[in-house]
Length: 111
Image 1: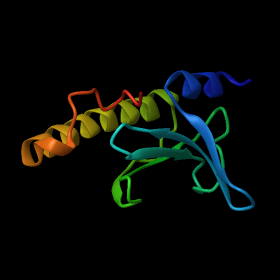
Image 2: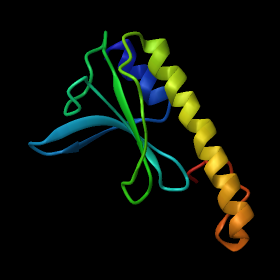
Image 3: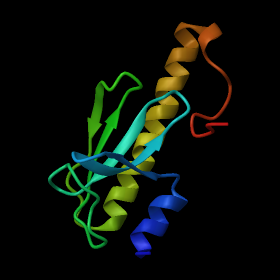
Image 4: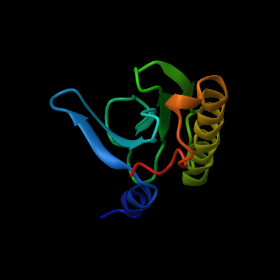
């Protein structure tokens, strides 16, 4: 298993695919939003040495943010950490606007 595969697994990603169409590393947050990490073309798993492309989508598949094309692993990891903060911010905003729908769980905790 390539080191990048182990890193993505350690970061909570799993391989997600639509047969015959695309494959990506997928990480879902507690609010249902998720990240997809692909190769530069956006339709396959990235090579171990990159480059990596990332997209952050809501639970309704609405676009939230696109990662700049990362040439180094630390760039995509930095972007992943950035989305964690965005998810936490979104959860806090939801909690303030509609308390009954929100929990005090960390958005990263899917249990």
